[in-house]
Length: 271
Length: 243
Image 1: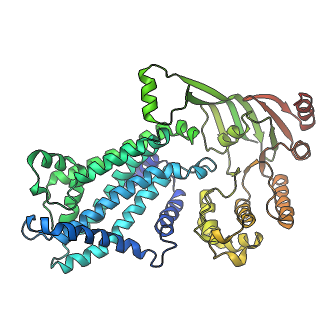
Image 2 (image 1 turned 180 degrees about the horizontal axis):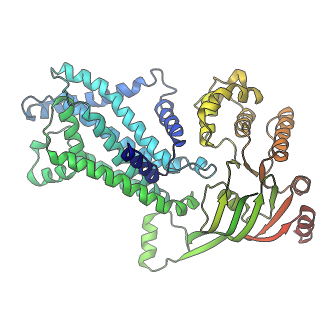
Image 3 (image 1 turned 90 degrees about the vertical axis):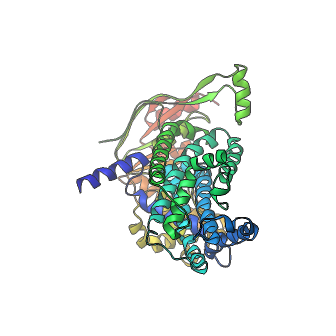
């Protein structure tokens, strides 16, 4: 009990939030989930439809090429869709949390709110989007004749860790973006490169050795492997993968918060 | 009881000698050795105390550091040097309605704005109707904010901001909001707040009003306190300083 308590205080200390801010955090998450689709007819249904459409297009293009290259027992459609879902959690979460600080400068320069709350809300909203996307993925898993594994609760942990990872980098980038506007373009190019080095739609086995090495170094590959393995056994994982994502998520989160805390008082004067 | 105390508060903006919006230009100048960092002093060792229930007015010309001081008091920015202590809940009325989202309904905006101001949502949920009724917008509560007129948005923001009596009220110019009826109503509420227990810090260019309301006046000039005393004296000196 005492241990739990000590852990909680640390969390508040790292993030600069207090208990009263949780209600604001929840409101912000709810807002970013609903506002985006406020003017559309099917509303939040887009969250379900979006990954399905993207996956469907990629499936048409790549299924001929790669469907036979997967290891036996693995199915291309859920393999692909898992890649799309996780990648959109990463990309959306990262860009939205990185832009959340400058995007809310109207609020931040007038009301005393802990600024990092906006970045956390963006990362968590991307996480919830991801969770909603698991519903169509489950359908695709059944259609391809697979079953959802008993290990599937691990998916939630994986998603949360990725949200932690993303918000750490997002906090770092949010400061950089405010200081130097053109870094946005550099980061976009880097993200494109990173996406190419993530096995979203191709199997890792088709790669040549040096490229395979790079792809395995990419933390997103470990996240993705664990996700695919725990949901419907569409990838192989090692113990090292788990260690890797846990360490990198917490490192990113703590360093991002630390960097932000250090630079914020100077950065707000630039908003 | 001293509720706000500032000891040697300074604030400087670190500025590069040139504005660099892009990494490329910065890098180029860095290579040429053309970069130096200058400190622009916006506030220079400010000292003062405010007691509970007092009304303090801050006057000064444009660029004297009034807004920076207000932002530091609102805890939006932290001072570069010095000690700031504030005992109590602050309601900054610096720019009302920051954070309103036009796609959300009036009710959702009330909740969001109130939680930005650090209020307990459970309380606010029960008071939503009352807030809207005071703003004269009860029948519009479920409409999106983009269907509101500018005056309505301002009324709603004012109603939320002044719904709870804070310990400390920071005001950037006394606002009169909306049409004539509402302006009277809002001014009455402001006066009520100022005359109550609550401590008020007010920045204003309206000298007549300052004389009427303030207990003490601080005259800020180029980031320094030039004079601090009773309203009549300070304002006479301020006026005779010309401009």
